[in-house]
Image (cartoon, rainbow, N blue to C red):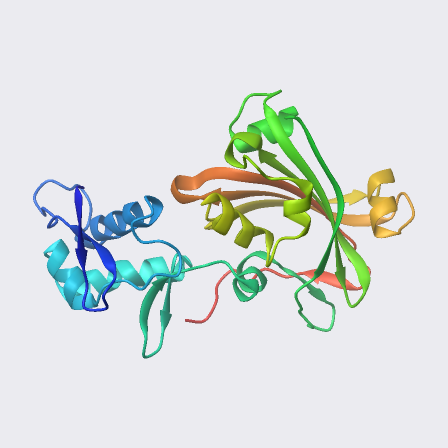
Length: 263
């Protein structure tokens, strides 16, 4: 779908979309509108934090009704790609601590206390992708990667040991200093410094026993029961951008993931 750039009443450059042709789409109108909006966001024509044009302007641009446009926007809001701010409009979502805590961090104390973890860098190096990381990231075994270890503290207690693998080609210029001195969450760094927006993640969980690396980072004995989480973070088009293996000490904390959330 070709796009032109115009200016909305809000005074910001906005992509102007060609009207949707209902005759040859093979999909509902609102999904075609959703696809057009996603393409503009992915291409950087609607950058993170920018307000969209009004519903009236967008509907006219796509040549659809307000209801059709709103249905497309509703799905993007539900997927945390757009965010509505009462009285201000609809914006392209940015990564911040609130989004991290709500969408991506599922560890909380057994009594329900949930907080942003204190993150301590435990290791940073460049290496070559091993088979499991290569499969998860869709790259070849042996390709250059950046490997990061973090220790996450909750209530001053080490609870999570993260091992993160990043394709080096996507994160050129990332150094240990830049990573350690970032302002905000890891996903904020990806978005602001490298133009990579994590939109969702796929996870697999299993029970394991602590091995030497977990023991050192979490301060537990080898053989202590832990929860292991394999996560692949995905950007637009379900393209993998990060592979993470987390060991969680569940002695005082739970892994909580709501299958549905109230609207």
